Image 1 (tube, rainbow, N blue to C red):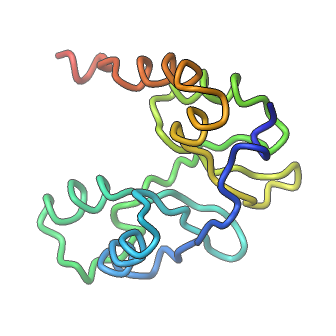
Image 2: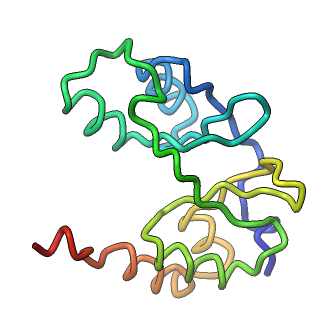
Length: 142
């Protein structure tokens, strides 16, 4: 199965110059824990509820801090015509629960989560990715 058959295509993008409060409000409205961050028609990062909690509020930033202060700028992504099994395996390898989906012109067309994988391919398909995500990194093990 291809990613474009499993992904969520109605994706909201947020600007890196918006506040972490605005990101949290949008996440609550969408019932989502992550948002792609876009600037000048390009994907420039991802912000998660964990980023806001740990890099933002936990680090003493105010709710008016800009998303660019807490987002992850190294964007991992997959293509809409990739195979879901391959993407799920990759998600485990890079330890992420969600990936932005781009077309071959590198334009954002959706987002795929482990939940999407499990719904479309069955719970077993997401299992290896969950195991990979759950493994401690060398830094965490120390």
